[in-house]
Image (cartoon, rainbow, N blue to C red; front, side, top):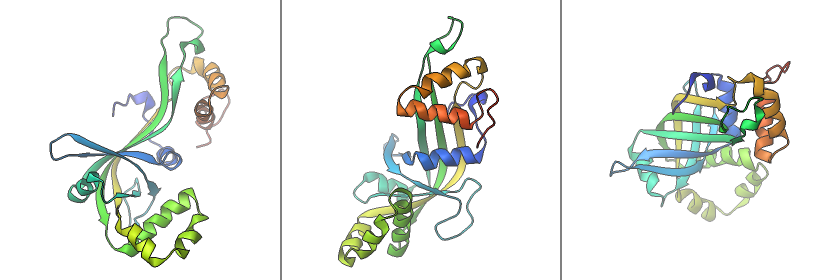
Length: 218
């Protein structure tokens, strides 16, 4: 992705936080006609493989899609894919600057990963993968899943294609006007008084130490 050096964040903890807090990813493969195929799929990041094997320095992503989704066949037949996570994002007004010769822009945090795809076939491993997703989003549902009839859970597991994605390369964009520190206080105040997404950006500014005398928390 286009990544000016002032917005290129190389702290792995930042990328991991974005992937965990905003798990609905865009997965892109190349279709048989050469045109990109995209699916929006929630993914679980972890440091090691589902089987406890060593992962790359960037970790792995676990997910699944419906077996009826044509993208499932591409993930099974192609070893590579592109995965994109969009974190909080919002408009930024030029009103945060003291001078008038400024233009609007957009603030955002994003992660892009090149991945190696591995299909998870055994039903027991697919079940383990689902439990990782359940633990992320609704831990209390795990007990209900365990108590469902085997005929039902087997049918559900057979209806998905599960995969593990080893992250081979990763880029992380943090575009919060880092190169314009004179506007940070006004920018933070505007976001803190805005929508819930804008308030999230204000907290990121705090956590990254972008305000005067505010040490980084991440």
